[in-house]
Each structure stands twice: as C-alpha cells, then as structure tokens.
Image (cartoon, rainbow, N blue to C red; front, side):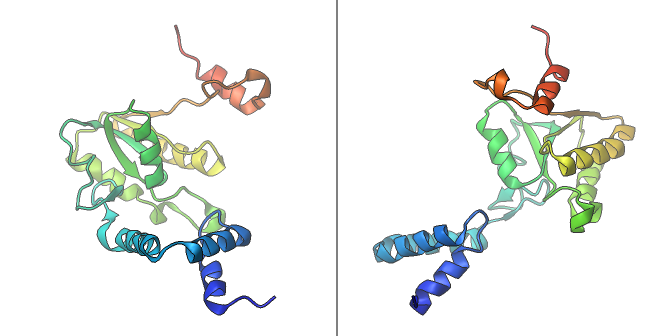
Length: 198
C-alpha cells in the first residue's frame, strides 16, 4: 500500500527516536495527523525550545537554561558531595528520590572501547578540574551496574583516590517491594555485600 509522502517522512523521522519502532512511529504520526493544529504547534514549539533555550551547565553538564544549572547555583546544596552520573536523565532520577542534596557531574556516557568511547570522549577531565576550585569531600559514583558502568567506576576511582577524596558508589540490591525468589544471583549477591546494620 502506498503511504502519502508527508506521512511516510513523519514515520521515518519519528522512528529515528530512541525506543520508537516503525509501528509506534506510525501510530504517533497518525495521532499527530488527527490532532488539532494548536496541539501540534505546541509540540513543535516545545521541541524547538529544547534546542534553542536549553544548554548544558558549564560546571556539571546537567541540563540548564543558564551557564550554571539550578543545582550548581543553589547555595543550599552541599557542594562538597558530587554524584557522578552517566546522563542528565540520571540527575532527574536521583532528584526524584528527594534523598540527595549534593551536586552532580554528568559524564555524557561511559567508557566503551568497543564503541570507540575512551576517557577523552567523556567529561572526566572536567571532573578532575573541579578539584582545583571546589572543596570536594566525596565522589559518589552512580553509574549503571553493567560492564561499561563498572569499568568506568573503577577507572574514576583509580584517578580520584590519590587526590585524598572519599570515593563511594550507590548501593545495589533488591528493589523495595521486590521478591527475593525472583531476583537473579548477581542482584542477591550485591544486596548481601551491600548490607547495612540495623
């Protein structure tokens, strides 16, 4: 069946987004086609504002509208703690917990030699430069518990420990409400190793 060219182009462009397959892209394109023009213009404006009004913080590389993000410019935050994350989306996830009140550093990825991502591709030298101007007491590594995340954590710990700063990593283990019976061995192992005293 021949699809009208504007619809075909919309489907192709939407399918380039992460986690959007061709069928989902088609459903989204048809939904937009059925939507009133005001709703579509609001969406277009929101997408355009992402590129024109947002930038990355000069200090931590979090998403910002100014040179410094809201977290870096907040004097009530504990700037002696830096939570190192992979992407800006991880900052949002940690902030939703309402448990962390320090600052952040976004690496913009993790080490992945097979994909050609080395230390120079990440914001590692910028993290180390922060030690020259900030009084940092602890670096908290909050990287994903996969092979690349683990390798990046070990690499960073090796660079930072000689600077006399505490390096920790977020605890790993069973989720709240999780069932021990259905957890994999690695998760249970991490939970046992990361146990806390009551």
